[in-house]
Length: 169
Image 1 (cartoon, rainbow, N blue to C red):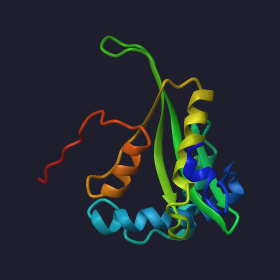
Image 2: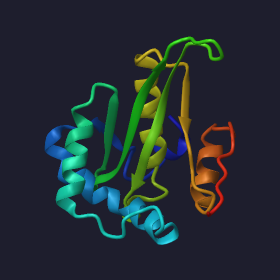
Image 3: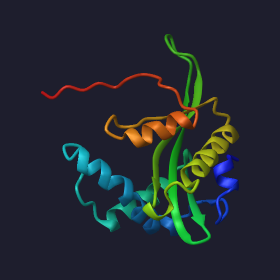
């Protein structure tokens, strides 16, 4: 556990696995990160997905065996953030080796809980889930416009793996 988690006056975040009963809560938490993405990439992201559609999508994800979703609570902030990750297993092929890895698909933290160890605790939960699932790597991606998230991931031990490039047609 990093020192910022141990030394925070309100204590470290409590991390728990999400359940289907949390679908609406996850939809609400998703807004914090989705609004950023929709604002910067309206060509890709829907501007205002309905809470009901989002909750339904989270219910579907929670039913998948490969998906892990965690919720962080602070003593003074219920549902301070969440992380959603997917375990991937790849069979060996002609060009690629067999592999198993966990991919962080979503990480969102409530503005009331930023810089309180929530994102770090959620990453730790995903790392532990990956290890428990026999994964050998932890992978995520970040938009170039999100320099704050990029700096957080690098500080958390992630290193660049490849670059995804695009060109408008």
